[in-house]
Length: 300
Image (cartoon, rainbow, N blue to C red):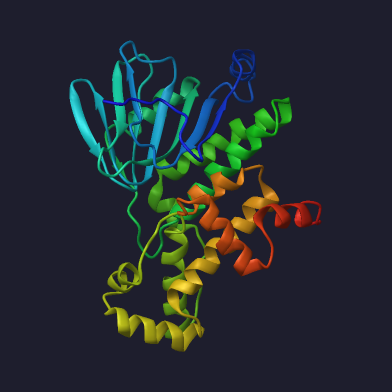
């Protein structure tokens, strides 16, 4: 059986040098929680890790798509989409991707005296199911922001920013309902409510390849009824609107991150980067590369 630890198409991975980690752990400002490494593995087929002696950090793995598994203390758990788990430091463990439906995971290795306290509150498999108030896309966007920050360099300001921000990231896993409740909700009539729910569902699933049937089923409508209602309210076909949301997000990544074009493609559910480039060019009138070149220096 093929077993791979990393090297997946479109992956992002940042591993901090030992001296940077030690400096953060000796800094009173960041000694309680410090990032060791973090990343994103899309469609991580054959992903497999077996640490017979564990590792020196706590490991959080969040499955955003597909499924995987982990084994800890003699117990194996299946990990579906929108679930996460934390592995304690210095404990033997194994984990890997599902064979039929490989997982897409965001992960982080972290240290500090608060790491154990976080783990104690989040032992076992945890769920982050989607609903009308969920903030899955917000959480993933913040994960991406921290990865992008660490990719820019290892100066003290960046490291301090990332490590202090780790508190916020972990709090979105610790206090899921509070994280949802503090999000400002749009107010308005039934029209506004429908539009808000429909676009919310699309944004929460922006990395996935969903269908009209998926969206209609979420509302409890038939495909034809949802299509007519969406067209009436937004004057846009639902799946075309969803595609434009993906391209808008791709534009943000091109301008505000250093992600490679194939990484953006995989992240937004386009498994063929060439197809993604064709759709992007058709939609914006220029290639992803040209769009990045033309907009990188625009003030925002």
